[in-house]
Length: 405
Ligand SMILES: *Cc1c(COP(=O)(O)O)cnc(C)c1O
Image (cartoon, rainbow, N blue to C red; front, side, top):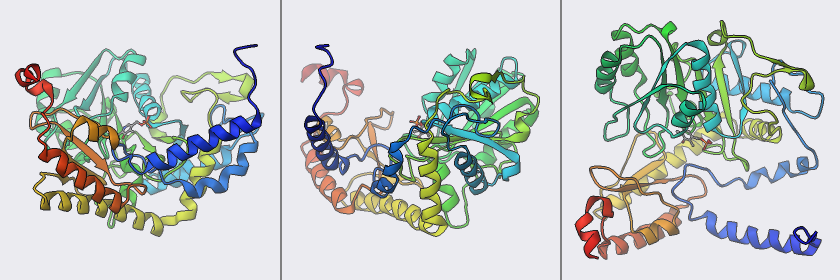
């Protein structure tokens, strides 16, 4: 009883207020993660918090004996599939609490399709693939080197495929990489794969579009082909907290229906009247509703504008840094500026990660909606002072000086 005394409503409200105040302040300095944290417009969905929406089971085959948003979830799968060039009659998918699980489902499908496939990712790939390999007991995972921009290197892929000479593979291409917002060159990579005599029936191709999936459909002329225009693509992940902006993390796993044929049958779960095709059991039913409504509300033209705005902001930041002698850069069509890592203090203040590389440690800034130009100007001022004070480089690269300090 002592452990759970029961808080008064007043105390709870105080706590909410204090926490909210902290979040409102801190949000504007969250520069280092690819999440659009401006979700104030989602307040309109707050009345739905009066219900428990649990999308237990498969949104396509599930009957749902309770309150679900399956209709909305299916509409979202169909809408997002069509944005990514997969017709809705040929798509299946469902909502996950993040792209880690959507990537895991991609690996899981590959593992179900083939006996002992080898996972091929790049050094820039998200850690979820290594986790998926452990969970699915995949025996072999190979990382391909990337170029300085962060794209998987076709030459190294070729070298590795020739050396490995396996029967089956699971490939993961990236649309908007974690550290550099890079887009893999799918055409060159596929040429290498087919050049090595590996046929589409011998592999599962998953596209990790956690970030890029809500960027590339809104680029003028859609120059980046990391979607189902790739006929070999079997499945894809796309997150909505990364670019669209929703209050709870969420992602869709989408598969080409024809890639699901010839799989061993799924179990039927009588207690929720559904084939057990999802990785999760109970699933958030509110988020698919919010995601669908927000996407439909903004529409294509507003999404275009917003996409262009965050990409322009990254280019503007890079210009500003370069004018001040900082060797910053960004990938084209990417809302991600890459720059030399600041001191640990400044990194902490702005929630910036520190990545090690032979060229020197670096960090990145994702110029999402909640990251304002004036906030970036303030950051640059501090950054220039910070670098002028000549903070030491990371100890890993200078063990001697680290020892001397
Ligand atoms: C964020 C991210 C993921 C993982 O998504 P979560 O929603 O954090 O689980 C996977 N891949 C890429 C490229 C990402 O940016």
